[in-house]
Length: 434
Image 1 (cartoon, rainbow, N blue to C red):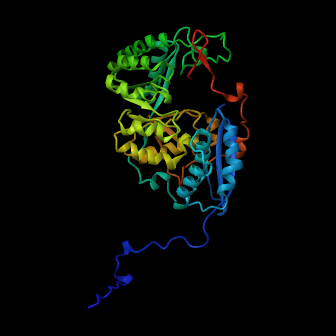
Image 2 (spheres, rainbow, N blue to C red):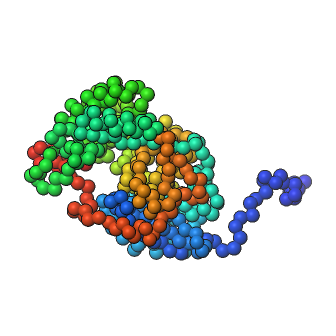
Image 3 (cartoon, rainbow, N blue to C red):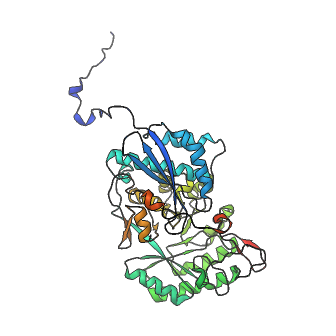
């Protein structure tokens, strides 16, 4: 006997199973892609603004590669803009994948920053259409706000301590500490106080960089700070890939006793193989990723549990779409997020970071930048930092916008060698990684 097909009337299906009717009318499409270049804080920022077929609806994204901004602008203007015009704004994943593959040769900071500007702006638009912050589209809040770390530096130990105490009084608990090395061009310190100085020629006139002096000074700095600030404050430090790998391993072992929250960038991306050796030598928490642009650079470090904090600059890996996948992948291996967030991550990028910080269960810490008032005027909705944390303003989308008229008041400053990272050199004149 033939089995009778069962027919269930819609009325018999519970209301919460009924299909959502979906939007009516024509799809919302990308009408135009604008590129806004501005530098209110003296740092060259590249912002993408996508305008849609819906009057008044637009989104913003960060495409800032501050050392090579004009190359990113060219990639967007001549290749990505014509590629996305007319596309449905909801097709974020398909737009990302097709644009990513369209150049055939993939990856790199130029392509990824260009993609990021488009990608972030589309997430901003999707949040506005949904009437909710982007973090809600990622699953909602996992915390009320995102704790941040700030930067304390000085020409000597006392000056670093003084600046750290000032931050502590403002409610910050996580502090990255860097100190000048006498007679050496030091990363992370104001040049006027013994910090980094450019050395464009083989025979530098200013202080050279001395790795040996650096590795002697840093343990003494943290010995001083732990004694002065106690055990409750979380201390961080950035090597910034500037010393030979074997010296970085030795320094990590010496710093272990001072219970750092993390030690950042002990190696350059080219030296990833040293992480296995480092893991065998010390249990100090390691943060890495600022210079990564390709999955093959960071996926093995996560899967082999060789790092503890993922610190990619999210526009350098392609934007929010790629970063949320990376965050989810890290969660399975116990790696926490600590997205790169200096001044050359625009306020739009910080807003994007925050959407992930609030929604990821494996959030670790967020690097912060205290934007001056003029930057906040250019970027209305700039994330608020108070009580040592970054807070969402709860506006739909990324919660931030750009005032184009005010942005135009701050053109790019002149940069020596077209904005290249200032080179430093060893005492014999050899150029060193930055």
